[in-house]
Amino acid sequence: MKKIKQITLIVLFGFLISCTSNAAEVIHIKHTDGDMTIAIREVIENAKGKDIKLVFEKGNYKFLTDYAVGKYMHITNHGNGFKKVIFNFEGFNSVEIEGNGSEFIFRGQTAPFVFEGCNKINISNLTLDWDIPFSFQGDVIDVNKEEQYFDLKPYTEGFSWKLTKGQIEFPGINHFNFTALGSTLSHNKETKAVDYGAWDISLNPNYVEKLSNGNLRFYDKNMKHFPRVGTVLQSKGDKKNNRYAPAFLVRNSKNITIDNVVIHHALGMGFLFERSEDIKIINSGIYIREGSDRVISIIADATHFANCKGDILIENCRLEGMYDDGTNVHGTYVEVDKVLNKNTVRVALRHDQQLGFEFAGVDDEIWFIKSPNPQRAEENKVSSVKVINDVYTELTFKNELSSDLKPGDILENKTWNPTFTMRGNTIRDHRARNIIIKTPKKIIIEDNDLSSMMSSIMLRGETFYWYESGNVEDVVIRNNRFVHCAYGGAEHAILKVSPRLGKTFDDSMLYDRNILFENNTIETFDNRIIWADRVDGLIIKNNTIKQTTTEQPQYPDAFMFDLINCNNIEITNNIYEGDCKNVLKADDVSKKTLVFKKNKGLKK
Image 1 (cartoon, rainbow, N blue to C red):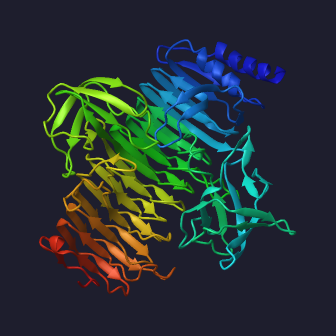
Image 2: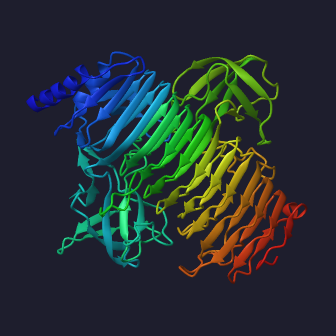
Image 3: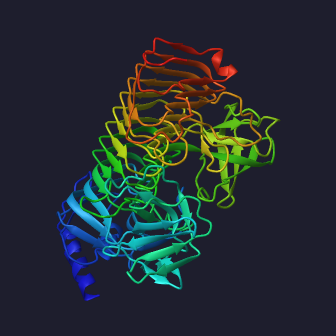
């Protein structure tokens, strides 16, 4: 306790001599050894006004959770619950953090940065990491499919786990352990990328035995996809608990710039934005620290935007090693539970990681999507919102509701949709897709280096399961370099357009629109390039496609261009080098308006 008081006094001394102006109170943080949590909490709580700038002397700062701010939080796409927050900025007008190249090292379950209701946020020149990752990993030494076991040489230095009663417990920090090894993948030991042909595994072995040489033998009678000998197997815990919080949570805020911020580990997503507007992430990164033997950086998406608006830019960033998508941009569908009167409807959030999410506010414009038609129908403006609980909300509208609105229909927020630009980034060596996006406004994806386990770019609105809206209307994908894509075990494509709609919706009706895929360079081993379902307006032109021999095709019977229930598709002036004969597959609907001409090396 004496050490904590010393640190607090040093930081508060910086607070007292800090300069102030009309713009912001500037607080200089001197580097100090030991836990900085209580000092930072007091600096923020004692701020003189609503404009604050923290300037850190360059150094390594440690943050423990014992004296962190605690509060119950609903965090979309994470587990809701009581969270421990280190940097808690709520209701500030402006917040600026200048790291000066400092490293912030965290321990245990924590939400490092939370910003709520801020009008301007600038964060720069900072690196985040955990001293002990929330993961378990080991080298695959032997596999015996007949007897349903595999052997691992577990990593010990820098990792925290123990074998108890035939099961692995990890990480054992602050009395927390995952209930199972859970989400697991095998990795190439040299590149650290997900291994060729690897499948997602939910690992919950029947029994784990310690062998005489110190290795561990995992017996699993339900295992369908065994890892390859020589790979590194990595587990991030059970689904219920493995998304504690993002490194940066920003919601109900605007004018956000993140510049030269690097995240080496986090207990959820890297950057998560909810109902926020005008966001820039530039010159930043999420990747494994150089020289580390970890094969995972963060637990979930690198960047994630839920019901945001304004302009979003991700530029000159390096995103690697995360265990979900490089970016996910989407709105949220809510389901009609009951029409209460001519102006009021009760709606429900249906996914357990959406519970408590703020779907709409007063004056938001809402689209109504009524089955069996998945297309956006009439619009109405919200006049009042009554939150019942974390599932149900009553929305009252200025105009009368349509008489045919019924339970099971879907609502989408029109107001909270962004324009999105992703330019000059490198996204690779991670689980899932490079980019998954759903916004009806302008989307530009250009000049990126992309390599993916699953589809590199996926356009997918979902009226069930994740309930992530919606269909795209204006997409430009140009001048990108796709190298070694869709190398996981499941079947994917470079670009996959694949709406996932519930049984009550007509799965033959057009959904996504106006997609341009041009001047891209593709070098990959498998067949699928474009796999499109229910698209109206897709131009594929001036692309160079080269079949590589880095790996054997996993799906040699698949087609390069696969079109289902599409309209107005143009495939022109593309160049192909390779021996794939399965070039084009189009159903009768798609053939009616298909243009396929002036392609070199491609024959229908």
